[in-house]
Amino acid sequence: MAAKTGAPSKGLRLTLGGAPATPHFIDGVPGLYCPHRATPVGGDGELTLQEAECLHGDPTIPLELIDIPAGELDAAREAVADALREAQTGVAQARRDGVDSHELTVAEKQIKNIHAAQAASDQPAVAGDKED
Amino acid sequence: MAAGYAQVAFESIVGNETNSPTLSTKLLYPPLVQCTLNLNAKPMMRDDELRNVDEPFAVLPEIYDPSWSYQSRAYPDLTGMFLKSILGAPVSTAGDGIITDLDAVVVPTGVTRHTWTSPYGPAGINPQTMQIQAAYKDETVFYKLKGAACAQLDLTSPVSGGVQLKASGLGTFMQRVSDPALTPTYEALTVRPFTRNNLAIATWLASTAVHEDFTVSIANPHEAVRTLGISSRFPDDIEKLDPPIIVTGTLPQRVINTQDWDALLNGTGFAAEIRWTSDSIIASGYPYKLIFKLANAQYVAGDANPLENKRRIGSSFNWKATNATGSAGSVQIQLMNATASYA
Image 1 (cartoon, rainbow over the protein chains, first blue to last red):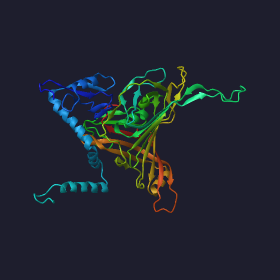
Image 2: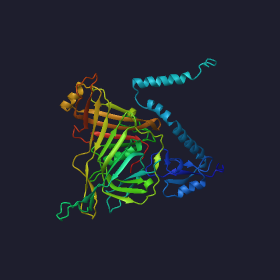
Image 3: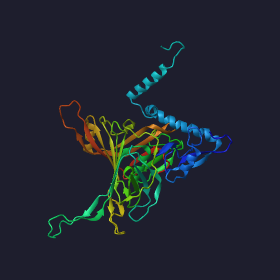
Image 4: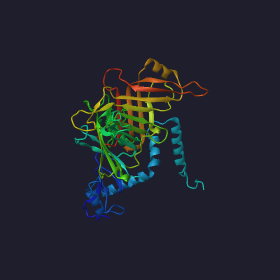
């Protein structure tokens, strides 16, 4: 873990021309990278600084090593964790977003109501009322 | 797992054997399903020569007429790339919480609105062209096609498998190159392609029959030209043909009714809006969207299906986006995604 000295930490930013502001994966490189924010390196479970410097120096890899201000490191790590969580739950979330993001047909409204009812039934209304 | 990739970039001018167009900042490594670069060699046959040899004669390399074709799912980023390839550059506007899309929905920060309005671009006699590199990495063979223009783009929405994007066209110069040592980079899998369930025909002919399917095709015909400006077996320019860029499609329907058939009979024009709204969110709850808004659509062909011993008999019509007023802008195509620019 990078020492909390106030000095900027390092991260890798995607430099692929015109890339959309979404996470990307690069052939042969672990992790997800974005053009609009850096993916931290040097921490637990992250690329080492040496690995990152090698990637930065490889002209065929669209990544650059940049500074992450100390105050923004935690937010950067949280963003990476969010991207990974989204990747893991993306299908389920996408279905919910899909239901919510467009005008629902009658059948889709029924599905949404069923989901809402199921979610509500998982919450015990009164202690001791939950079925075994 | 197979190792291979394609890279697509726009050219500043039509590429050919001798020039070196500036490539766009925007680079795309599409998650392709199929990409084909065809040399279309046309060697000189000399079997019509009287040489008193009753055998076919050796052919001579003479000309090549490259072409290309591409197929993938319609992911939001690459959809814009291929729309630019056939329609020219869009007007790209960053969302700011004030601008709206064609549905009058506010476009938030983090979303870019790309708009193509007929009669499209670019201006001049040359269409937008691309450079396509195809890497057959497992076989260590690499090809580059310059001057690739898009003549046809089709969007189909099968029930499953995602919206399919197919594109094709001609090119000028194709060569085998050494390993360009490119590193393909792809958007995370969380960004979903448009799918059939995203599709809504929001506006169509009043009292139309129940729809079964819907397809969109964009045609921008062009020809590969040998201008005699350079000595090459390949064409050295791509020029637009005379017809305008045309947006058409098909509309299979589950039943027949009088409205559609009468509209075909009478050439009735009607406003139309076709919308794909993705399951994936870009920012602030705003999803990826693709919208076609037609000021005037007309049926140009079609009929009821044959009368048979069936409870339900459908119909199918071909439609075309047309201009009924003479004022430009009869078709607007808008794509909302996270790509800031296709320049």
